[in-house]
Image 1 (cartoon, one colour):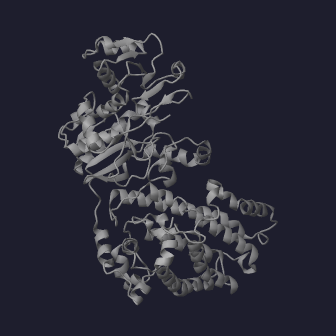
Image 2 (cartoon, helix red, strand yellow):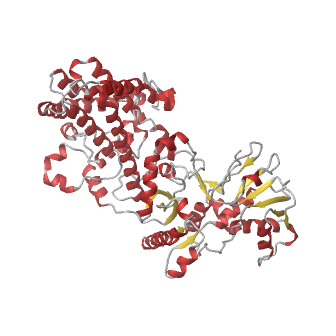
Image 3 (tube, one colour):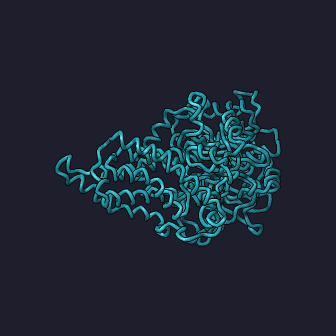
Amino acid sequence: MATKPGVLTDWPWKHLGNFKYAILTPWVIHSTYSLLMSKGEKEANLTYHLIFPFLMTRVLHNQIWISVSRYRTAKGKNRIVDKGIDFEQVDRESNWDDQIILNGILLYLTNMIMPGASHLPLWRSDGFIIVILLHTGPVEFLYYWLHRALHHHFLYSRYHSHHHSSIATEPITSVIHPFAEEVAYFLLFAIPLMTVMFTGTASIAAIFIYITYIDLMNNMGHCNFELVPKWVFSTFPPLKFLMYTPSYHSLHHTQFRTNYSLFMPMYDYLYGTVDKSSDDLYETSLKRQEESPDIVHLTHLTTTDSIYHLRLGFASLASKPYAFKWYFTIAMWPVSCWSAVFTWFYGHTFVSESNTFNNLKLQSWVVPRYTMHYLLQREKKDLNYLIEEALLEADSKGAKVHEELNGNGELYIQRHPQLRIRLVDGSSLAAAVVVNSIPQETTQVLLTGRISKVGYAIALALCQKGVQVAAMNEDEYQKLQHSDCQFGKNLVLAENYDQKIWLVGEGLTDKEQLKATKGTVFVPFTQFPPKKLLKDCYYHTTPAMVAPKSLDNIHSCENWLARRVMSAWRVAGIVHGLEGWNVHECGQTMFSMDKVWEATLLHGFCPLSLSV
């Protein structure tokens, strides 16, 4: 929102939420119906029928830019501005499709009202040339002075400050404007289009290519990584005045009073508003190499829909905790199926997210496999290869800590004893989070599901504190009793289900959960939460902690966790790196729970409150 919102700041359909797309429904239905009922090719109005498909291509075009930009900036190669983005910016820019809806309405209305806008030919060279000339002249010139006017304190505070709230830009930042400002831009860009319509030289290709050109240049100018190679300008030097670069426009977002031009810097050169550091920043950004992380978090996809919730996926989904949406699953099932098949063949981890914390560079790498792949025995060899390859790559980049995603890290240590990195599966912190979430007045808990090493450590710590731990499963109880550690008399076999705190491992059945009494608190010690079946009971999240504000560039949620909440397994890797602990924590090895808990709190991570 602008600092002092002016007239027509809000979009007319702001309060409709996702129902705003219904605005286009009458035209879409009518255009589809008229196309089906048209008797011949001459009767069909292609311009009218192609508007909605064209709008869909614009959405896809923007999404591709979002994903590519986030991937490139996460890797660091050719990145321009190092400042991260946050949830506030993501929320502010979540309405980037509003301008597409507005354009769709105006295109439909123009086609219906203006005689020269319907039944257009596919191509006319003279009209295309007119569009190019009018954009180069009037449009670029008028935009330059409009843009300078918008930076006057009166208009800036009421309108343009909303756009400039984003210092580190994303491609869609380009279209984040108040409604009145966006209408002004549309009227400006309509000059070439209206001219060719009035002169009878318009064509479908000229209109769609011109709008696509605007989208392309807008996205490129705000993508925050330099992608225009030097040979482009050395081959044709005058192009420097006819095409801006991402670094050129990035300076406008960091310096504010320079580089006002739309896509052609010639007016900045003509009126002396070129930032003097434009060439230097361009050279520096092109030379910038891919970053070497200090800490790598290795993760994988879960459900087939989880790919859309990645930071590289849909920004609005990634910024919210994962929640199953049946309508989304149905709408996207062709893409979901394709991505699931693709992961069977794609064999390399990829960078999904980068953060900075206390001068350490953090990266999240995604193993291109879903949870279902981990359940298949025949996939075990390929999975081990992918993880091992990622370990070696992280080691070659000089990472201090590599957080493992399963308990088989000992295998990789045995194969590569020369590894400089330290493997941390985070079990000690996950156990510490659970133990410290148990109220001090607690006298007994119920241990359910399969007992992992995290559950084993939790049970031992609670027994040593004098809390009675009742094991629901007799086999798990016998395993604990016959282990090397002494649980004493505080470990018992459960005789009933009256305990008000249940420690939940994997494999808890619905039947067992339904035996819980009213007010029972379920505390999972696994990476996946149990299904919430009982409305009169309470459910903790999986072991997690709230990240400190100084942890930069967090703008996506980790699975089902809330904003700025990180799983204990991920936090543990960060803490190990910050402390410089030169030990592995994987396989059956456990780090000191008390030591890692104290260090985690010292570095600003906070315990997560109970969620109902």
